Image 1 (tube, one colour):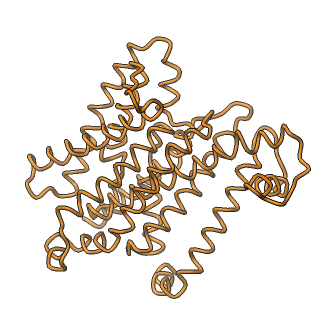
Image 2: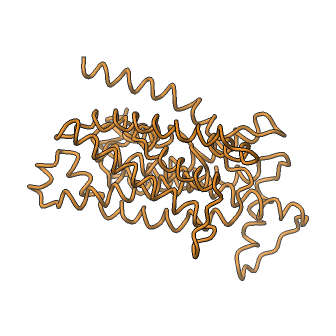
Image 3: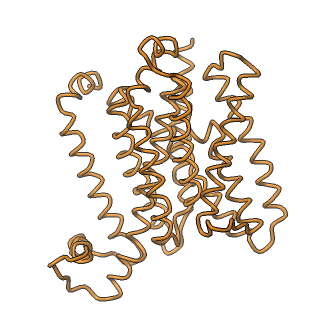
Length: 351
């Protein structure tokens, strides 16, 4: 079945995109309609259409319902989809570049680097003049980028060829090391403890429009960077020497791809906290179904990641309603078993 899908993916590429966009739209409306107060599908659609600037349509919903949809649930659902798409794209880029399905922002330590930067900002109350609200994502992205540079540099010291296994093991080492500093700040924290703990577990609660406008431009920039390098990712999948023979400037392209993936990871961590396994599971499952051509894999991973995290957010805020679970708990409960299955599959290939 999977072989048939891969053989006919180019023929039905437009249909595949259309169905995934349709599914994401359904999840989008469903996510907005579900909560402590359930709102009918059609009412949600009417409100959203009426809220479009210069829309000639009107709705009959109560003001309180409109506020719930527009000011509370809409930005949260949009943010969940942006974060899910960002983590899935970053994971697809890391896995394609390193030629290893176990590579993702979490295992490479990039998420931990972003988390350390964000916790540093929360702990010390740092504000960079001129950046204001953007201080947290800026520090998060910078710390993610430097973490990746340290991982690559250390991997090169251990093994000059820098095999993907060495890079991943180094990433896990750095992730644990940075986690120790995060734990130290938590131990020294006072009134900020609840905020930092909740943020580290991953959450989209109380995230308004400011977070959407913060994450969206960074997502668009990084997505365009990856989109323009999708052919180079395909070439690099055959090895750096083959890519050079095909005319790819390997050094520059690697840094552009790594930079884009780091921006995606850092911005996602900055607005939602640490959400593990999305960047690992979604690209891997997408690759199993649709193949490893990055022209198709990148946009499909984006759609699947967006839909997956929106669904996870529904579970997080409704499973023990009126209380709410951190979304990172939900993704870990789903992702950890899948991660185990991937490890078993990889071991069988090696054996």
